[in-house]
Length: 125
Image 1 (tube, rainbow, N blue to C red):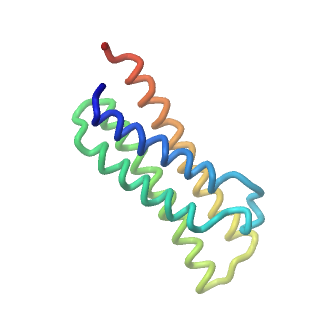
Image 2 (image 1 turned 135 degrees about the horizontal axis):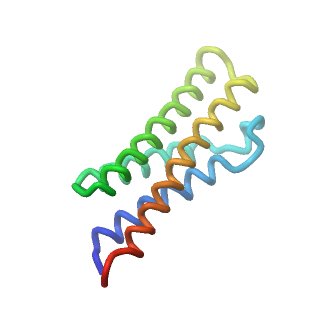
């Protein structure tokens, strides 16, 4: 068992599940999406990105790219939320944009988990 793969896989899958937990629900009702879950998804995604920095393989580069996309999408969602909360006001368009950004991050996380799982299954014992 490779401890680095276990920790990296833990953070990759935790990032996916937290992001899904935030994304799941009616995209027009903000009360169904918890701000703390979005914050946790951002932090765990950043930690997963840091773990991917050391991988020098081609697959590691793709995993890092997917993680960076998820980070940018989640930070964008949080920025839109903050802008809507304190500047423009939260309306349906703003709420839908927040959830759409987290949906984009969710797609990047799914790609990352699929690639990571494929790499683990391909590796020899």
